[in-house]
Image 1: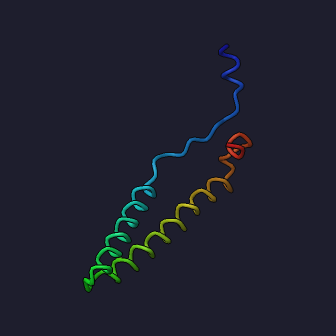
Image 2: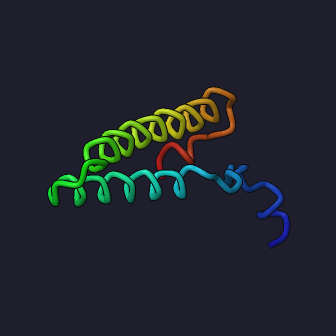
Length: 82
């Protein structure tokens, strides 16, 4: 049984990431800005735009990390199919 585990293909597990937390914060800023905008508060449009832009930056960097890991050869066929 232990010999089967020794021959098992390597499965890459990435470390902790800050991107989910930053994505949540940027979406919160987007929704707070939208709510303020609907209620005619002066800072609403600016917060909404800042939230959308920060979310786009988070997505760009998050996908950049995933692409970098893939190009570095950290993923194998098992990861590609999952």
